[in-house]
Length: 260
Image (cartoon, rainbow, N blue to C red; front, side, top):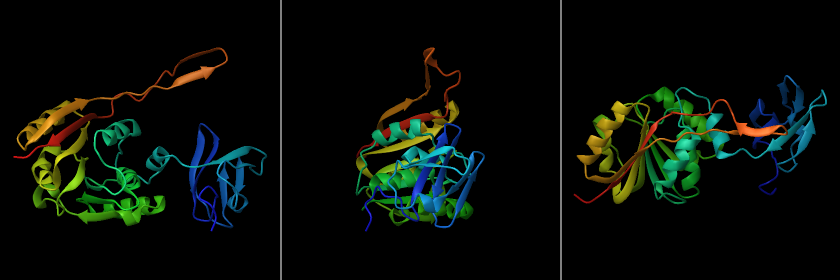
């Protein structure tokens, strides 16, 4: 058996040519990957370590890198908008989940959050993901399967606002739906006392109604924040921030459940 840092058939590899040309590719023998800087024979990279440097047929260098969790998120096939890494990283730290945890996700969407949660609770934890639309679930399943975490996820086509959740005593609840206030009461009955629920919404009006629902359902330590991100340009002539950054994406809510 090859070591984990070796590229094998089926491995997900980030093929990086430059900052504008980076591709998440599942390695297959006898497959040629085409770019505007030349073709790459994927059979060439098999058996090499991550970090391998090759050349396209036009002589341009490419680099085979281990995909980050953010890469896996951004490269999913999307049917919906996804949570940004800057927001999700903060919210993960506002919970107490880790390997072996059980988590409820309300709003599967494209499965970007699903696969990140599955990666955090692996190898023995489970993500219970609820979604109202079966077509979203099928797309999310494929995204999670491609990332290698399908065994850590259970999908349910169910409207939590109407039918609630099936699990009890999970370690955290993540909410990504347009009307979070409609699922707070039902989600409460699946969450361990003293544990955390997190939610995000793009509009202030959504935040107000969600906070009211949290207060009415035995949640305390409610916190709302917003995170912005701006990269720096590092060049020989000087260092300065980029003209554009990732500013408002969502308002982030965290709350903790107490005994009634």
